[in-house]
Image 1 (cartoon, rainbow, N blue to C red):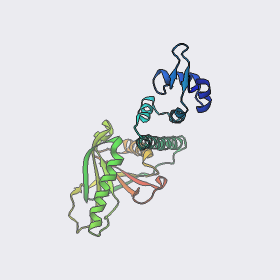
Image 2: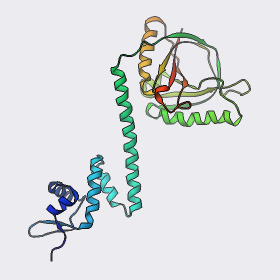
Image 3: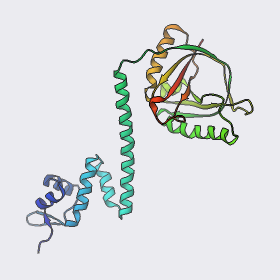
Image 4: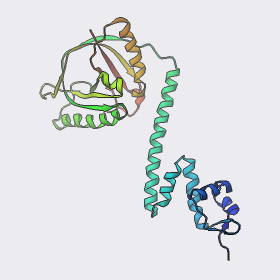
Length: 262
């Protein structure tokens, strides 16, 4: 005796078209419980409705079919939930990146306020530092680890930084999307520095807002320097006057961009 639900009825149960169900059968993603050898009619077990619902939702989230197959192949509910959680985490990260890009594009379309450029001669600066060769797409994570260690070292001594934390970026970092970056925290006289940044004269502009838009300030400041000064082939310095250690709101970030000039 033939058992199971015919494809048309199963389509109504799971809100997947018969065409889609046939395709999922062809690629062995959702195989019918029974296929009539003579007629080719497909019949599904009611217990397959849960898998069909899951597939429909995951496709709505644009999960690749290969990944859906891996989820369905998990041996138990706990393993399946873990695989789904990993995908949702990736999606949330991608959504956050998309929101940042959309906000950045909107700001780019708005008339940018003029950048005020000041000049400052910075004396040699003793700092605690961490240096590394860093990829542009990995710099945020690298900073999170580096500054945790630098601030923690001062905190253990019961001391505050002697100024705003900052970083230097080599020319190679911008030209090749990877290069030497130095994260630093100025130290008071009682702390032996691990590095002394050399004294330099800088053209300085303050970037207001998220780091993602810092290129706009770089462009304005760099154009100002190109028109009026002789730039030095030295690392660009950023000072984080207001940053993630001060606020959770990127709109409140204030970053000094310091361009070395003669």
